Image 1 (cartoon, rainbow, N blue to C red):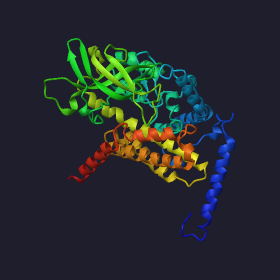
Image 2 (cartoon, rainbow, N blue to C red):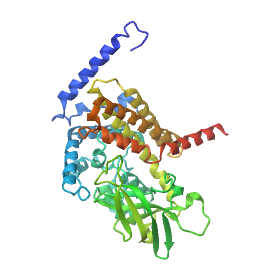
Image 3 (cartoon, rainbow, N blue to C red):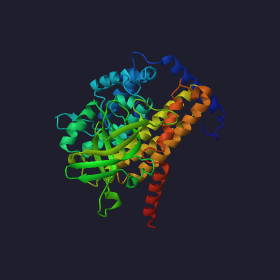
Image 4 (cartoon, rainbow, N blue to C red):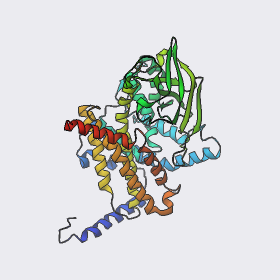
Length: 443
């Protein structure tokens, strides 16, 4: 309420009344047979004033109803199946059955590859959706409410999303036939090998893994770590970012190549799974991977020799929108858990981060990824930090339960803290913002 109003003192009582009402609805409502009805749809274009097409609204509504009816209630099933596989010693060998069950249902509904701009592949099938960055960003927020399950259910999970985008944009017909088609079908998974232990590899110019071109192929030698998705039993492709071994003097930005490496290629060794705040994230995992005299054909290079840095920049822009909006969805989930405990509202911080992220998405839609670089850097700092703050408050409100396995809060806190490092640490994005400001000031 207005603090200067004569009735300002009543604002708190009204606020608590709404919280109690919301909590009672949450406890009593649950998920019912009407979850798929159109009446339950929240129209984001109404409360945010964003330009969503009729098609996007239709997709959003269908996504929301499917999440309410099938995905969100399956979160506990997913957790139980993961625990059972771990107890049986098969956590790295199998995927929880509920994942493939929900994937089949989502695919049948057309809720599939929502992130991907429509593309017709060599098999004659068209994949993807006609959604803007803003429109898909709102759907990412919805998926973020169940981040351990929802993105994969709709074939919209990283690192596959970024890999599929660059294969769609830069892959040859043969590369698309072999790798992109099964990825779009959800039959295989992939990983992206860039991070290295002993260099600041958020800057791609620092990578040390060597790629040597010979007469009949490329030979790769080096070590990577925290390679997300490499542990998945369905992972068949590694996109390796390596440095060209050459006697020529090359620009720092033309020394890297991206090479498509089948995961079963001789010389590829999957080593220990790295933990993230104690979580191993099996079966997806974040593995150490070594490459020892790994040889692949000349047709394995993506776009061409020395084009790796260029491809990486194209890959990361949309991915950061996705990460940030999922983080906002996680923050919304945390806030709702806090509301159940009757605590003060944190919606302002979430709204600010959401609007900033959607502004960046709109900049990408209207001006292009390069012109939106500063806005993208801003959201990659703001959204994860905001979500960490909200999640930490939710943990505190829940007491011991907040760090237990009974709630998603501890996992969210670990995942969100990691997000401040993933896709470039905060410091890299601060540097991007500062550079842009210097350019604007003509200093």
